Length: 189
Image 1: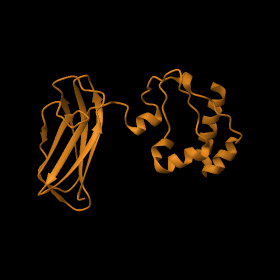
Image 2: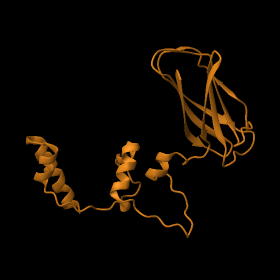
Image 3: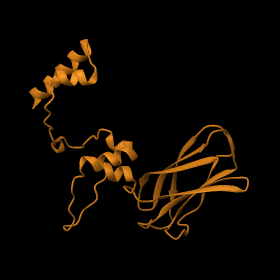
Image 4: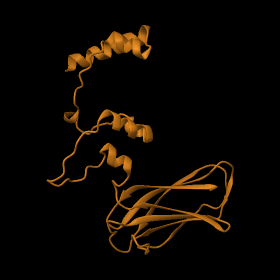
């Protein structure tokens, strides 16, 4: 397929959503005749007017734009945003849910917490299973910034500052800086 179209839900309100649309050619420049977006229910019925984006012509690099789509009624929970890009007689269509928090990354990293019922229990993944997920979704290994410092657990490590510097290959001023930083952390605890 010569074009890639990506949708990302940025905001959701009761009657409108804001989405980012990225259209990029796969490899060489590609002609684009048009791009349209529409807010629909799960059956594909339009919830509001179709929006035509001002993207037309020879596309040599990715184009990203953010648009707001309004609904004539409250957006149902299973609503979706549909984007279509076309060129000549070909087209590509992509969809994304109109609900915030339905992206896998937001769910897995806990950016938005969903209420859990009393009968739900959560268990931590064993390290081997987590490693499988990290290989397929590298963003899982990125550090997570918690909104409340009380939620941070201290980890006990058996490595000394010298061992950590050696493992990281640090010497001289860099090693001294890390040792001072680790000493400050110990004093703060």
